[in-house]
Length: 449
Image (cartoon, rainbow, N blue to C red; front, side):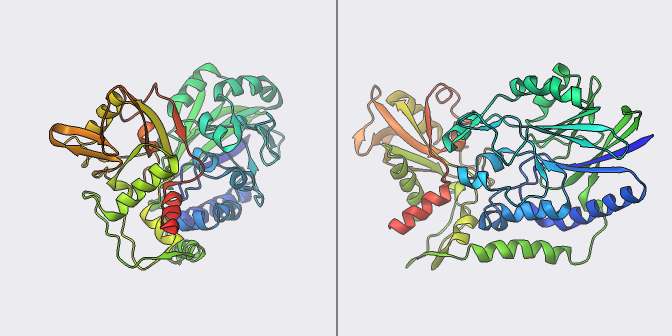
C-alpha cells in the first residue's frame, strides 16, 4: 500500500497576512509525511501573485516566487493575474529563479512554441514507482494575451491533444485547472481519464471535494483562507481511495512573529516603491461620491491616453487622496486595480443609453466585486468631454449629441466584461490598452502636468 498526499493552494492574490502560518504548516506536513515514508506534493493553481500588494508590485512578482521557493512547491500553473497583468518581458522572466515546475499547456509564443520556462505537463514518480502525470491549463483570456504578445489556445481543445499521450505515461492523472468550477465539472464529465482536478479562478470552496463521475474536484477558496489536501491510497499503482479536505488557516496553530514577518513583506515592497513622481502644491482630496479634482484628472488622462472623444470612470476607483510628495507607493495605494483603459466606438443613441445608465439613482451605491476592481463601491460617475443639461440633454465637447454620429468612449475595461451595459457593449469592438494599468495612466498625467 502507498499513501500519497497532495497539498494545494489557489487564488492567494498576494494576501500574505496568513502566509507565514501557511508556510510553517506546509513545512511541518512535509516533514511528518517524510518520516512516515509517505509521498508529499505541493501545487499552486494560479493567481498567487496580485500586484495590489507592494511586494508584488515592487519586485515585479519576484518576491512571490521567492515565497513559493521557500515553501517548496512541486509545481504551479498560472492564473490571469500572472498571465495578463505583466508586460510580455515581465511574464517571460517571472519564473527565472523558480525552484519548481511551471505547467501550462495552452500558453504559447506567437510562433506557436511553448516558452522555455514552462512545460505542458510533468511526470512525477514516487519511491514505489507510481507515475503521477500533472497537467496545467489557464483561463481563456485570448485577446489580452494576444495584445501582450502571447498566443493562448482554448483549454479543452488543448487538453484533447495531450490526454492520451499523458494517460499512457501515467498511473495517476492530475489537472491543475485555473478555469473555474463550471469548466472543471465539464472536464470531469468529458474526460473521465482524469483522476483529480485541483481548481481555481472561480474562488470555489469544496470542503470535502466533489465527485463528478470518478473524478475528484478540489478547490481552496481564495486569499489564503484555506489549504487543500487530497490524500490517496494506492495499491499496485492504482488508486483504491481518494479523499479531499480543507484546512482553515485561521484555525491552524499560530507561529512566533507571524505578524511581524507578514508586515516585513509589505515593508520591503513599500521601500522599493518609495520613488518620487511629483510634488503637489495642493491636496487632491478623495470622495467616491463626489466629483473631485483627482477623479477628474484620472478621467481626463484616460481620454487622452486612448485618444477618444469622451470618457467616463466611476469615482470608487480612487481609494484615497494625494498630497505633497507623491511616490509609486502612493499611486498603488489609491489605485491598486489591475484595470486597463479601453476605447469603444458607439453611435450617439448607444452612447446616450450608456451615459444615462451611469446617472441612475442607485448607480453610485452599487457594490462591485471582481472584474479587477479592488475597491468596494461604484461611486459617482465622472465625465470628461461630456456635459449634461436640462432634461438630460447631452453635449460632447460642447456640441449637442448627434444620435446618428459615431463617437469613441474611453473607460475602465471592467465595464466591458459583461456585467454592465449588456444591451450595448457585447457586440461592439473594443480596443484595450495594455500593459498599462490605470495607476500608470495617472502617473503619466501627473508627470505631464
